[in-house]
Length: 331
Image 1: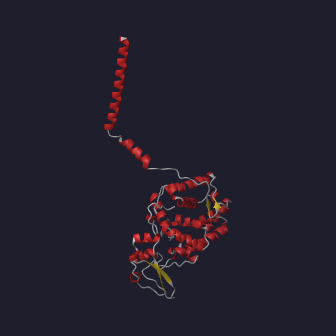
Image 2: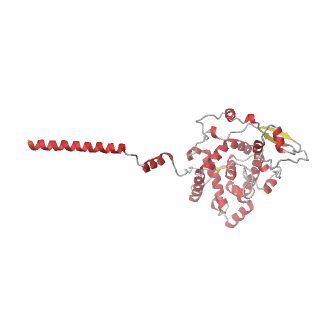
Image 3: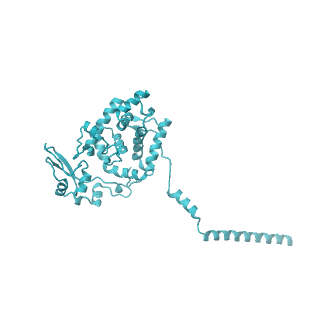
C-alpha cells in the first residue's frame, strides 16, 4: 500500500513539474522579442509577391492565331511578358496613359480601317508617349521623317505631323496594311515595321522561311512582335499580372477646345497667351508645334487644341469623366 502511495506521489510531482516547465517556456516566449529575421521573412511572404507570368491558353493578333504550343514561341513570349510585368514603373505609367489615349487610338483605327490590336504596336513603340528615338523616329508610332513624308505627313522644323495622333495613326494603318498585303500575315508586317520591309524580305529569301516564328532575325526584331503580344496580354487583364490601377488615378481625357487659323503666326507663345492657354499646356496639347512661329504663305488651315486654366481642375475633370470611384479599376 505504501509503495502504491509513493508511486502516486511521484506521478503527481512529475505532472506538476512538467506543467511548470511548459508554463515557464510560454512565459519566456511571451517576454522575448520576436526574431527579427523571421518577422522579416513572414512580412515578405505576405506583402512581396513574385510569380511567373501566366501564359494564356490561346492568343490571337488581328484575328491570326499565335502558335503557343510551340516551345520556342512560348518561351520567347514568356521572356517579354515577364520583363514587362516586372518593369513596374513604366508599366504603371502605360496603364495610366492608356485611359487617356487608348480610346482615341481605337477610334482612329476604326475610322481608317485598322484592326484594333494594332494599338499594342504603338504601346511597344513609344509607351504611349511622344518620344524621339536615337534614330530620330518620333511620336506614338515612331515614324522616321522620310517614311512619314512618304505616307502623307507634314514634317518641317515648324510643324511635325508625326506627333499628330490622328494623322500618324492613319499613316501607320496604311503602312501596316500594305506590308500585310505584301508579306501575307501580321507578325511579318509588324516585323517589317521594326526593321524595314526590304531587309526582312532578304532574310525570308535567304532562309526560305515565310513565317515570323521560324525566322532568325536581329535581336531587336526577333523580340519585337513578342513584346507587342505581351502588351496585349497584360493590358487586357492587368489585375491578373499584379497591376491594380484605380480609374481616378489614371490620366484623364482632357476637356480641350479647338481653334483653326489660316495665317502665319510670328510669335507662338503670344498666340497661346491670346487664347488664354499657358504655353506649356499649349505645347502638351499640340506636340506637332515644333517652333515658336508658323510660316503659312499659302493660307493652309491649321487647327490647335487649347485648354484654359479654369478647365484644369482635377476634381472637375474627374466629375465630368465620371471616374471618381475608389473601387473602379482599369480592366
